[in-house]
Length: 379
Ligand SMILES: Cc1cc2nc3c(=O)[nH]c(=O)nc-3n(C[C@H](O)[C@H](O)[C@H](O)COP(=O)(O)OP(=O)(O)OC[C@H]3O[C@@H](n4cnc5c(N)ncnc54)[C@H](O)[C@@H]3O)c2cc1C
Image 1: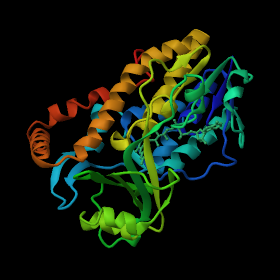
Image 2: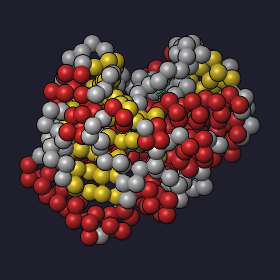
Image 3: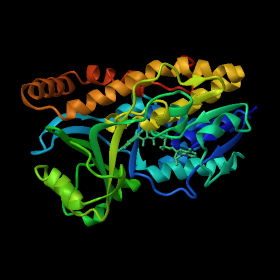
């Protein structure tokens, strides 16, 4: 059997490895002439790590990652703690795999090296046009072509992605350049209609900043370099740890966040969508890349067990889980941006629950982080 994969991001590369591990031939087409650093840091939770381990890149990625002790939610303007989860301990003990922070490029490089080593054939600088999709020389086609997927639009007949009203800002700063360091875990700093997340990456040598603000998108391009003064003005009321990271950032990137109506199915004939092409989501649960990893594993298993019928089985197995993750990502973003009485009620509830009933608080995360698709047949 032979698969053609469109797109060499996290999802496409993971699919290439998963398919090669099952003896399926792979041609992967990537429009970029070479892979460059896209984005900055990513969090890979325990459910994503299970897939990395099964793909054979877990240890390599872990060695250059940062393992946070805690995940915290704090007020953006005064730094007061709302929720603290001892993630390192919980991830290992409860979800049986580490929770990691890393550069996206660290993860992607490891996947590319492994796909190459396993004999996947990579065609770079090769943009697949919509009318080529059905004619690719393969038994089935996997579209991993991201949020602006041509395959989704032309084969699954959907409208183009629409702007969500939210914009993300990202940068990475060497920790040695900062006078005041953010807490040593992942910290979400929440304020009305805006929040920031700071994480440590590069084994603790750098600080990764993601900010998400609400408002109209007035720039022509949907991603690219951002004006630091504009970002400083947006986050001026945040704690010094956040303002300092922004002030010391050489380069800040902006990302207009887009969304799609959910699909009824991720497969059609011999074509399947994975990752952002299938189910783009807000980044506020840090699960987009993780879901792409899970998709890749499940799809390869379905294809190897059921050949082309496996595509529909993959779709059925994945659709409920990713829909829940999409909804929860959106909910989390809104939770971070609350104001007024609703904010007071929700944050007080979360604070009390995490402090006085920590086991119950953490148990409510099992549906997401506690899943291992490499052994669970039903996901
Ligand atoms: C601010 C922000 C923070 C995030 N943080 C996290 C996080 O902490 N954890 C997490 O899990 N996720 C996170 N995400 C989400 C994550 O980055 C994405 O969900 C993930 O990268 C999607 O991977 P993908 O392979 O589906 O798509 P992409 O990474 O977009 O890859 C698509 C690939 O397809 C190629 N391509 C497109 N069209 C064609 C074509 N016609 N022919 C050939 N090639 C084509 C593109 O060049 C690209 O290489 C974050 C996202 C944002 C915006």
